[in-house]
Structure formats: C-alpha cells, structure tokens
Length: 302
Length: 302
Image 1: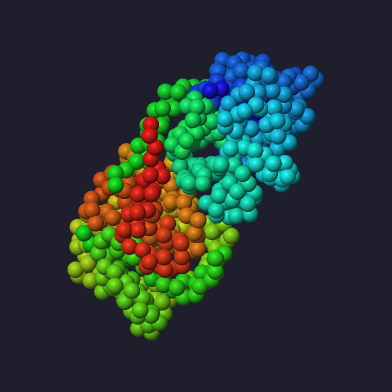
Image 2: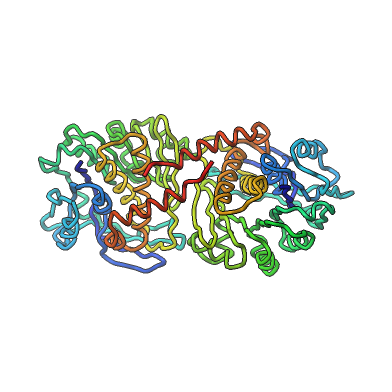
C-alpha cells in the first residue's frame, strides 16, 4: 500500500565528535521517505526553495518516492538547521534555525495523494498537520510525530491532532513534557488518553517503548559501535515502522511489534554515517540480515 | 552450587519522590544475597556493628543465606548511607556516608567458605576484593562489581582484580570512566581487555549490556509503572544473575543470557518498594511468571 508523508525538508549542518558537515540533505520527511522506501512506495509532500539541489530530488526519485508533492517556492530558500552534538551524542544544541519556506508552508496534496491509505504526519506544526488531515480521504492508518516546541506553543491544536490520529510517535522527554509524568510507562499510557490507539516513545540509544490498551513493551536499540551522526534516527525509525506496516497492509499487534523492530534497525544504520550516506549503501537484504541478528539477540530458551 | 558473596552491609536512609525512610536494611552484599537466594544457597561475608538489629540476621537466615561470615564488631557501628533521588529517579545525591566498621573491614572467610565454587565480589575496595581472592581455593566462576570511587582512587589494585576475575559488572558511567570511551559498545569491549572474559554494563531503567569475545547484546529492563526506590537494583541484578548461574552450575553463553534476564527481573521487583520489602513478598514462581511475560515481550515472528 502507498504511504503518504508530509513534513520538513532541510539542508542540515552538523557538528559531531566524528566530524562536521554542511548543507546535508535532511528534514523529517526526507529521512522518513527514504527509510520507508525499503518497504513500500512513498508519496512525499513538502516545500523547498529555489536553492534546492536537483540531485536531491533525483535521489529520492531513484527510490520508490513520488515527489510530485514537492513544492519549489519561487524566490524562496530551503529550511536550514545547524546543530552540534555533545560528546555523549545524546544531547544536542541547535545553533541556527532558518525556517525560510517552511515558515509559510501550506501543504497541498496532489489529488491522487488524498486517498493514500497510510499517512504519516512528520514533525511539523499541529496546524499544518490538521490541514493535511482535512485533505485525506478515508485513510486506514494515520500516525503523527510531534516535538517539544508544539507541545509548548500549540497545545490546543496538538490536542485536536491527537483526537484524530491512530498513533503518535514522540521521544521520551516530549512524552514527559506532554503528560507531566516522569515514569515513562505511566507517561505512555497518559498520552494514549489524548486519543491515539497506540503510542510509541523513542528513547534514542535505549530503543523504543510501545503502548496500546492491551500492551506495554520495550525493544532495545541495536547495539552499534559506529555512531557518527544521530540526526534523522527518529525519523528513519518512524519511516521503517510505517513503511513495513504499509507493505504488509496491516497494523495488528504482531505486525506493529515487527514494524517497531524494523524501525529500530533502519535507525541503527542511519546513525552510522552522516545524512542518508549509510542508508544509501544498504538494501532490504541488509535490513533482514540485521533483523536475524536482532531476533537472536533477544531470544533465549526458558 | 553454593555462592559466596563478600561486600557491604548497611543501614540506608533514602529520600525518593515516593517517600522517605530511615535506617533501612541495605548494602551491596545484603541485596545480592537476598536476590541470589531465590536460586541457590548463599554464603555471606561482611561486617556490622553492635547496633545491628538481630532481626535482619534472622531475615537473611530465613532464606538460604549462611551468615556465619557476618562479623559483628564489638563497639562498632554499622555502615550508614543517606541519599536522595531526584524526580527522574535516575540521578541520586549522596547526603551522608558513615563508613564505621566498613572502614576497617578485613574479610575473613570461614574455612568451609573458601572452596565455594561461585564467588561474587560485591562493591568494595579492590584491596579487600584481592584479600578475598587470596582466600578462595579453586573457584569455578568469580565475578566482581566496582564503582567510580575505586576507578579513581585505587586504579592499580582494580587492574589487578580485573586480571583475576572471570566477569565484571559495572554501570554505564563507570564503564565510560574506566575506559575513557563514550560509546558503550566500545567501552564494554575495552573493559574486557583488562582481563575479564565477560563484562556486563548495567544501564538502570534501560537494561543491561553483555560483552564477551563472541557476543555483544543488550536486554531491556522490564517496564514497570511502580518505581518507588531504585536502591539495590544493581546489586539484586547481580544477585539474580549469579544465583541463577550457581543453581545451574553453568556459565556457557546461553546460561549467561538467561542469567542476565533473571537479574533484570529480580531488579524490576526490587525497585517497586523500599529496601527488600517487595522481594520479601515474592517467590520464585513470581519471577518465572514475569520471565514468561518478558520473553513474550521480546519475541516476534520473522
């Protein structure tokens, strides 16, 4: 089944203990799309400026990513983010943000994108996420991401989004901020009370937790000794998860757990190099090989 | 097989977001012993003062814990620790430490303890750990714990200990301190280079990692919504792990992984109340029930 994603498209500059890079291909919708494209065809909606390198579009199109929803804003500049990761690679500092065309982004879905059965609202303002939802016709599964900025500044719109989505993906500090609850098990279920049938809390290098009415579980990250750049890990986690569900055209409990695992594994490759560099080297077979290792790691006899 | 443990015995005062308690039964060897006693008989060596409540000894003896190695120092006072947990329950501040009899503790193993096949050197100075090793005759498996204090202040003795043990258990910040390596996968293997055949890095609420020449894996903590007091979690993790290995009289790769899981589960009960209060309510069946849940949580079809 095709998968729609709407979100940010960026040129990132990052400084990590492993090195620095400027103007890298990035953004939540880009990372998500690339990760999902191992599993299914993707329909991408987002905005870029006139400075957008056309080879980035070509790269996306070389995958199963439909870029007809990519708005190139005349006279505009692409969203830019500059950040620095601390020695522990968990904490990061945002040094510069230039919203540029993202500041006035008005998502317009091409007609044939509107009936897309699987929908992911990548990180973006809840107001924009609502505009996307208003254009979708009969989606089977809608999942959203959010961040601290929107929890603080657009709480009312975010609550409205949460009533209208099936699932929410957010990180641990965001779950605590949204619920005021320190214990992540309690926080996860409190997020569910806002509306989503399931909630995924991303814990970075510590994996991800899943919450539904009947289930609470944790899956660890895949341990990697090669940690170069964590940017995009969360977005590729979501892309792997949603891509797998769309491929399967299912979202029962078993499928969701396998989808979480695929998300974790795509993210584990993402952090091994800058931007999409590591993902560009691997194919579905590499993911499945790592999946075998991951399943063995987590299994033991009674 | 019987299991020997040498370490601290304490009266703890703790302040957590869930409440405060004074003069609780605690200490690394106490937590370890109680946890291990679900699986095997334990021989405890440690020192207390004349103020030691005899009911604590009776509690330990009501389990399979041999307390003939408990030295009651005439005129001495029991080691005391007072600490405060922050809202996140991960960070804690030590408010008071009174070493008392622990300051002059000289471990003397009763004769029939010296041939104990399984040995755990709980948290204590490397000098004391070496004295214990000198008294052990032909142990099959020796595992040690350590902490930041000894890594900083008794590095040479610690290096000597690491040459003489089969396994080391330490937490994430200690592994980073000992190796100067931020990435835990690299840190774990660097610790192995000091001598131990296997290394376990405890990550608190995020579970534990295992490192041997052939294996690197992580197991998550069991998610619990009841977090009252984290004191003793690490020691009961080690107690569950070593107790299970001693029960099985094995330490092959498969046994070690199941032992890690048992350690994680005993610790998950420990934190649900103060001191040993939660562990006193459960039996081996409760551990095995939680083990079933844990294994289901981590398993999914390919």
